[in-house]
Length: 190
Image 1: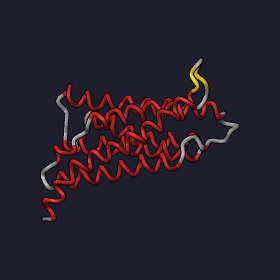
Image 2: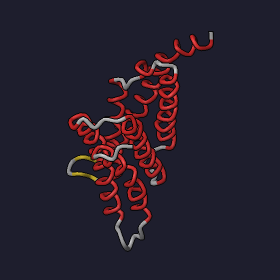
Image 3: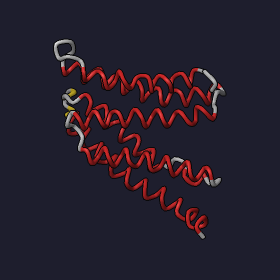
């Protein structure tokens, strides 16, 4: 495992998860609800930005590694899953939405692993649809964490719309990936 700046940023995202979740367990006399929301939003947004930054730095500095390529999506999925679980607990996201998004991430990760083992990993590379789904999530989650008006923007309403869009895109992209993988599965069975 090479320890370089991109991998450090990926590890930092994972280390931030307990702080991100823990902020909602502070006593109200220590941290107001508004400050909990703001703190969680800042932590999540910083983690999302380091996700982009670590990939950019790895390519720019020539520090890509198999370990980094493995750990980066794991860190992303852990942070998104933690955020969704917190949002369900705070009653800001329906459990079915969290289940769809988290379930899809687990299923597609397993599918990618299997496809890599049979030598067809390029078949399930990240699609444009998957990227749009991720962008929808990355807009929705901070808005739902913040949960207060931001000028004329009602973060709750806009965040709710974006998380439902992300859930719908999650299902559509999962069907897409399964359709791509199905011919490989039939060849293995036959």
